[in-house]
Image (tube, rainbow, N blue to C red):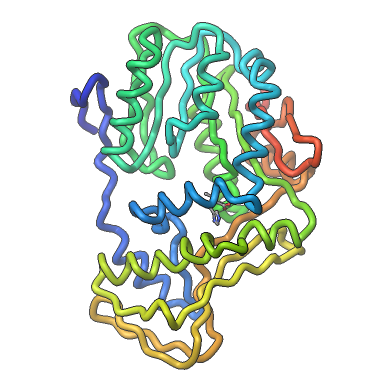
Length: 326
Ligand code: AVI
């Protein structure tokens, strides 16, 4: 890890490898069920398309979570407590984070953790100028890999991890437990985790949210193939793959697929991959939780759900999880 000065902030840099994409993409395409890791959606165009998704009438998640935050942020801040160090894995300097920071009582430090160094530094610099009382300590790391929290100049009384946006849903059950367990350890004794999760609901609502009428989600899904073409010397013909969203009700999981239109052979780097007509690549899973399922998940990660806030339609939940025996 290296510490350096970047704009107005001190950066703790774990130099997360950025060249792992080739290996992961090739090994995903070699599986019997071809898969692509959904983290590679977010190149520049993918990030813009995701922002556009968040504005879509069908994609209720962002709007609903923001509504819950606006209605209950004071209670959330009280639950987390004063003199806090707030850690945000996969941070984005979003409106939700600012809402929370503004309600916290005398927060000591804000630690955004992100793999994208330039974006992280710019967002941290912006927050640092906006809240001069707050020590902003960006950490450039893959939040799924081990890293240590930087020590703020003033000693915080406790730490909390903020993980909004239902990003947890993009991890399978085993990985989700591992990730929550990691966050519990980051929060430490007396700490907490404030988590935003999407809830199970009418499959038609989910279907529309992941297959919108304007085709923005389709463009977002197909963009990963364009990225592979550009960065890994691939030759996917984007006109010969179609976006599909499928809800598996038993698992409470919406899957995004890229379906091959006809038989074809695609080259990526030096490897060739054959597709038969209708064969699909699984590009994302987005798990939806019941409140019982969320409580069970928390227990598996050594925590309990202490408080939870829902919208009127019970579409989304922001939950405060506390380590057991804390
Ligand atoms: C980032 N993540 C929580 C989004 C989700 O809803 O699973 C990604 C997304 N995929 C399609 N639309 C949005």
